[in-house]
Length: 466
Ligand code: AMP
Ligand code: ZN
Image 1 (cartoon, rainbow, N blue to C red):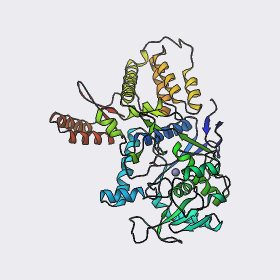
Image 2 (image 1 turned 180 degrees about the horizontal axis):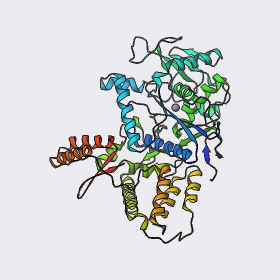
Image 3 (image 1 turned 30 degrees about the horizontal axis):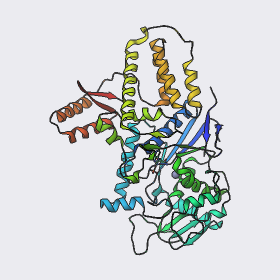
């Protein structure tokens, strides 16, 4: 098997993957802030991370994957200013904050399922690890890395010389980037909050006592704590979008390495953005973001078409969203699905042109994915293989092998659909006939939760097992 190579943001180079424990790989992926639905940009990050995990599995590694849920402490301002996104949403919706967190965590997990993303082995919530987070601040305080202001305990970045290592920017340049914010009490613009005090005279829905006063943890703290809690010594790979490089991940490294004097993670992989037309990053705070529901399901496109679209762009290249490109990806995805069904129904007696091109598709596929997850190339190899003169049974076997990495969930299976599912499908057809689209959407979601996909085609509704 070809060497497994990743582009490491730490070295800004492609490097061979060498795990800490042979044959094992530890993976930490920064999870969602659960005050709203995930948008397609966020989901691009999780699809990339899923491909990464599948490539590790394909290469024979035993993977331990940890993901956090940010349910406290992520502020609306970039750097320790503004409101807690969760508290703000709870106030706007006049709801209990814990219910909001539970609702959007659940919605996020459903999105992962719809995109055929393998669940992490360990989920950790920020609010479940407050004690450990306080303990880390205490260590930093004892080692002299902190100072107190009127609104919290801060990390003094001038005490940590390696601060710019991940971003490859010197402290002066990072300071320029951070200067937009008006926090007069910070000693340096890059300093960041470890613990914030609850505002005077205000009772937050989420707050905890600490050695320094009632408050809540700074956003970066949770990932330094939870990655180490979940992975122990297996801190191989840490991921997120490129927006995390200069602040969030830089601060995670500073906290951990200043406290323990050990390297935090060996490999840092970052995905580029999904942009909306004009090169603007899709963002939750923009308020006009696209979800699996409003950009796919409501247009009768299968959610997995978005996974297909994401695979067509290398994760380190910006991806441009347009309705048209998504519709095209959907056509190609459905075509692929039909192709595999046909191959499957042809059976072993299918056309046998032998290895006409003499090409070793499996080797080409492996070379592509092991070269820093080149999914566009891997998809192209898969498509050429399907068009080739190989016997149907060989094609199917190769496809199923490739799909372990691509994760498009296409098996060519014409399913036995259970009577319960058939009943729901009939009910949905009836609802659509009566133009009760609210009910039909609800039933679609129910079917999707059960692992089925619904496509409304000209000759009626079709149900597929995912
Ligand atoms: P958040 O819920 O904002 O913490 O973001 C969750 C993940 O999505 C992080 O890894 C972000 O870096 C990533 N992300 C946010 N916006 C985009 C975008 N437009 N394109 C790709 N990834 C993004
Ligand atoms: Zn994080």
